[in-house]
Every structure is written in structure tokens, then in C-alpha cells.
Image 1 (cartoon, rainbow, N blue to C red):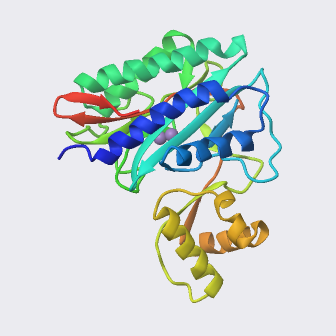
Image 2 (image 1 turned 90 degrees about the horizontal axis):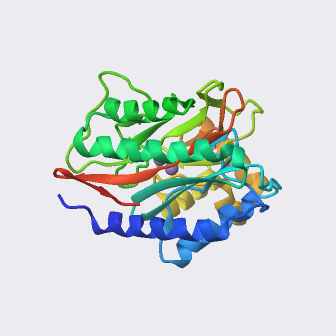
Length: 299
Ligand code: MN
Ligand code: MN
């Protein structure tokens, strides 16, 4: 099976967006504005966001997308991760960059970028995901950094961002092996050598900002069904953020409806993940495909 053309298109647009981000994202800037502009620019260029734009400041590591009323602004001392994705017909290109104007963060950012390069070099010749993890871990350790050991890369399938196989950021035996035609993302996360080296659900107990539909099911309640259909129409099983539906339902009402759908397990929330000791975390990510014996970087 050849790469659906949509994967190549999604990858190309994600690559163009990286340039756009490098030119347009500069501190100080409200995080909400960054997320909205990234998503609007993807749409303006003919694509769709594959998931809500993740903005991770310092120790905020994954699954945070700013909501209305979030006044957080980036500053020159911050480390800022932008994790974004593009899809065409559910074929997803998932990618992430880290930036900072703070000299203290540069070595960690550079090392994370090199860890991704080392991981890609291994993936080209050895499809064992444990070996990819080893390359990431060793690159980090050589410079005195730690990897986040409970976050990993993943395979992708149509309308599924996290499909069956994980690609760890540490060496582990007996991990899955990548196969011909697998599309997958590798995403090293590095933190300080003195940090905990793993993420936990945001202990402030904030509500998730990212959700996805787990099933398209009738509830018997008119308003809930209307929300499920609105999500299905726009997202199928791809992740969404309340921000995208609050115009239609009103923010307060929407959050109540989502909580009810979550309780019924029709919708799943992804809690914000933060580094357990609060240390800053850097991330780079590419989506790629094994085509026969060659590895094609899509993003
Ligand atoms: Mn990502
Ligand atoms: Mn990913």
C-alpha cells in the first residue's frame, strides 16, 4: 500500500506551518492567541487541525490547549513547546517544536532535537522501538539530561492519533517492532538530570482542555445528542477542545454537557500532564513512514 496522498499533504502543510511558527511566535504573546492563530493558519492554507494546538510552557508537558479567559502570556525566560497537527480526511501529521529566548534552555532544546535525529537514524536501520528509545535515552544522558519515561511516540491510523504501538523514550526490552507501511511519530521529551523524569496529571485539578469522542451513541437527551453529533460531524474520533464548540453551546453549558458525556464514557478527557517535579521539558516530534526499506519523514 502506498502512502495515501493525504499523508503527504498533511506532512507538507505541517512543515510549512513550522516556518510560519518560527516567524510568528515570539514572546511576549498570549498562549490563547498562539493556539488560535496556528489553527486559523492551518485552515487558511486548506488543512484542518488534527488536534487542538498544545502550548506547553516550561513544566507543562502535554495535553494543554488554552481556553477562553486564559490570560497566560509567554515571556522571554520561558521554554515554549508547540505541539500541532494537520489532517486531510483523517490522515494525520503530528509534529512539535520547542523554542526559548532564554540561554539557560538552549542546551536542552538542542539535545532534544539531536535525540530526535538519533532516533530517526536508528529507525532507518532497526525497526525495534526499544532500540529507538535507547538512542533517545543515550543522547539525553550524554549531556546530563533525563527523558520523560512515561510519554512516548506512537503509530497513527486514519482518524486515530495514538494507534496501537508506542515508541518509548527509554530503552525497554520486548517492545513492538515497526512494520512496513507503519506511519508513526517519534517524540523525545527531555528534562533536567535532577528532575523526576516523568509526568503526572496536573495536580491543580484543572479540567481537561482536550477531549475525544469514544463512541457515537444516542443518549436519549436531546442536547447531549446534539453535542455528540456536532463533535462527530466536525471531528469523528479526532481530539477537540471545548473552545471549538463554545460558540454553538455557550461555554458554561458546554462544560456541563462534556462532563456528563465523560461520565457516560461517550467522551474521554485528556488531563493536562506536567513534569512531576515542575522542571522544564523540551520536545521535538516528527511523523514518518516506513516505505519498504526507506524511511520517509512526512513532517
Ligand atoms: Mn504531537
Ligand atoms: Mn504525537
